[in-house]
Length: 163
Image 1 (cartoon, rainbow, N blue to C red):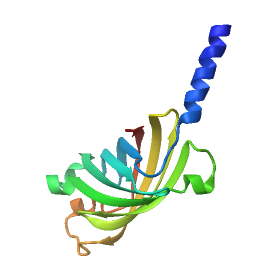
Image 2 (image 1 turned 180 degrees about the vertical axis):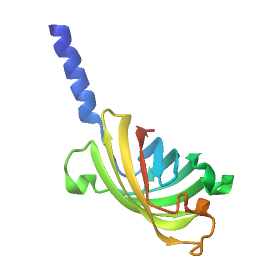
Image 3 (image 1 turned 60 degrees about the vertical axis):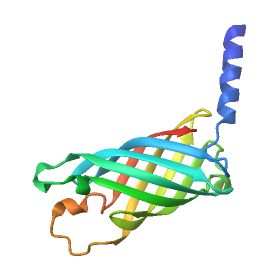
Image 4 (image 1 turned 120 degrees about the horizontal axis):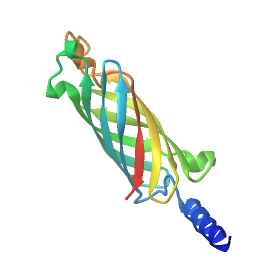
């Protein structure tokens, strides 16, 4: 019984130390799946904290499952973007393990926005979800349906890690 209590105390202390965003010099790495109309893929991102509630980052994504009739080339399937996040977890004060971050991104396909949330279960591991949407598309007269990949509403879900 004493061993069980000690184990529970150690685990509870590790959960208390988990923080979704610590501010300046925070490093987050995320990997997950993305879902959109006619395509699914993999999403990888890195965010670096610049201040108490601000981070910048880079995102790379590749659509693996694309409907055959789209005839998507590598350029259609791939996207990379730089992004800016405003972390509201400390402002909302829900839980220090929880963070909500709206932001803007500039990609190879468009200028867009995103709203995401992270929850950390321990000091190094958590889960995330993001909704990504275009605000201004670079090509407005799109004749090839494959150009809609990453140029539409996208949902990302996956794992988040502290580095």
